[in-house]
Length: 216
Image 1 (cartoon, rainbow, N blue to C red):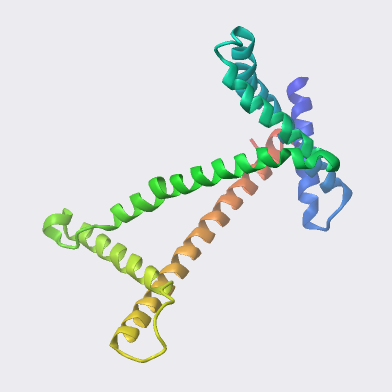
Image 2: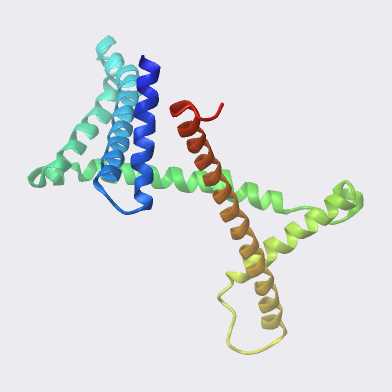
């Protein structure tokens, strides 16, 4: 009975979400609010049981003398709660500043070490069949080099207004980079559309199979 009830709830919520295809309506908004509320509730439970209790409350309860530095994040978290009241919102500025500072440092460090430097390192490839590992690998590396140089040239905005061979060279590479980006964006968009169509097929199969039993 619990499985049947879960299938009916899932089917009804699916139809409520797809009702947005006709127009914005209360059924869609109810399903949206249920999804947001359940997601926030689930995230809150996960945070309490995997972060706050084992990494903050239990160390403080076990030995407050040696674990007193844990009081600092606890105080910052409590100050952040004052943002809910306009008269006390200024008390949470310290916590927000700490969050934005640490977040910006982690984002910059992650982008530099995790994306920018590995991409630069991966762009240094050989276009010679001897050192690249074959003619096919050399052709792939050549396309990679042309696409990388063209994309970088497209975002090169510091050329002077005077005409010259260097300006024409940059404009040619910028045109190549423009087409490379168009092809890349088209492939990404097509991939996302395929993912959405796959999700739609899965929901239709669920409605016709698991719910209505019309297909096996």
